Image (cartoon, rainbow, N blue to C red; front, side, top):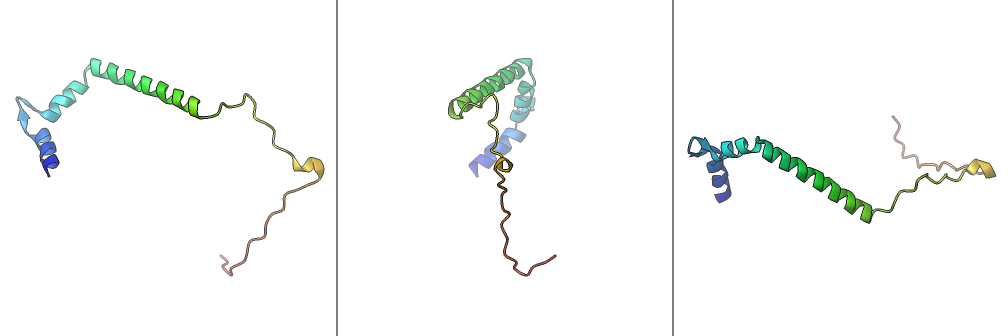
Length: 88
């Protein structure tokens, strides 16, 4: 309940000419904050790529070919599914 009242006060109670929400909204539209957000997003993306590269195995430059069953005359068999009497 206290958190709800704090949010309502932040959004509706004026602090001077504007509410707290309006002050934050005005600050978020400045060029300095936009530059900081862009820099933060870039650094987070770089960090995510570094972690992904460290944890995931490296990709091979060319994918390995899949074995071909037709070279040896072997074809995969399609399994028979049980018929439960439901037809469409």
